[in-house]
Length: 284
Image 1 (cartoon, rainbow, N blue to C red):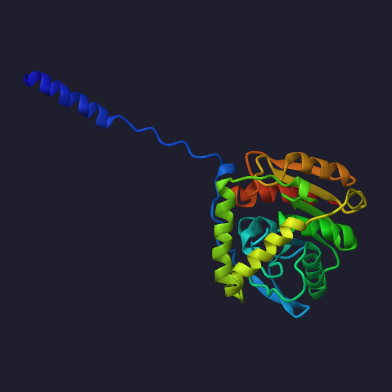
Image 2 (cartoon, rainbow, N blue to C red; image 1 turned 90 degrees about the horizontal axis):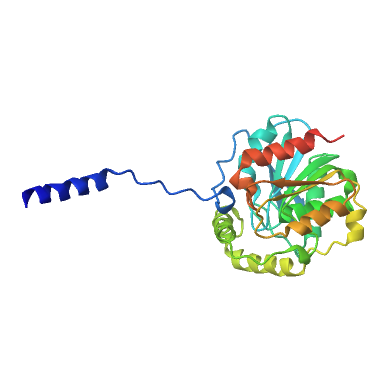
């Protein structure tokens, strides 16, 4: 009886001491890491457009790269890429109208309206030509700039963008909900009008239901060196749509970031920055 009890205790001890297999981490494209802190050396400014202060932050020196964030986001969402880009370039991150630290102002909210705000910032900073790097809504704004103000662009790196509503997926991925939850917190922290969150969010949703509406002819007329980029596992944009856009824009490159999603700038900032720099370094 006693030996049987000792045997049982020994078996329990063996089970208790057995190593527990570590849970396998989710692949990067299913993760939503928090952006890192904003790099040091930032200077801030604003340009008033139609009575609204459009605010920006800048780092570094050299040929300028302008960063345009996604919908409901802000310029700080690029914090993971800024250091690598600013090592050899002047980097300007703009808060789009109503986003981040920028005022909402008046007039209908549209991609073209926000693109014109970017031109006003370029004028205010006396920048003749820049490389635009846009993420999602920022990429759509970049397309508008390439169509209407191509003479102001050295190049366009449009990530996770669509040119019309047919390019959108229906998805319930947790990364999407996590992104908007973080955007809500950022809005309340940064906005000069935090009480307008619900109104502004409704206005954005209405815009997303009707825009963008670029035509194939407009894309085919773009003369700006362009990279159409996306994550391999984008939750929002159809892969075939990105491929089609790259074919429609003369000379455009298609850049697919492996193992990443629509939120690649947060999932692997180093890989994203390398892709941008490879594009910029190849510009004439």
